[in-house]
Length: 95
Image 1 (cartoon, rainbow, N blue to C red):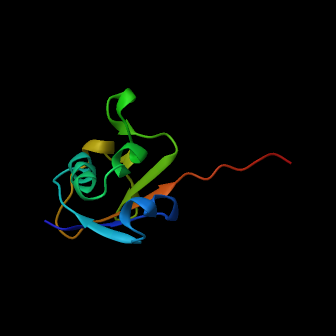
Image 2: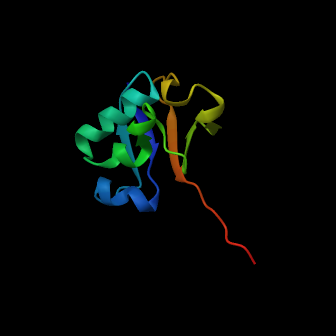
């Protein structure tokens, strides 16, 4: 089962500069664990183990353009051909 994952610029140091990588897994959590086997260090930038393996607060993850926080979060089910996009949250300053 191949899942395409779009990697934001800030995480591309873990993927040797690749804008997109493929991974496998039946859930988002399994996918991130699979990515970690080939791109060491990427999982800890996405998943907060101190919070029971939840997504980090300032990382947004989309499955086929749907925010996974409104689905099942890290336990969201995946199917072959899905597209996952990882985006760092952007915070603005005050004027």
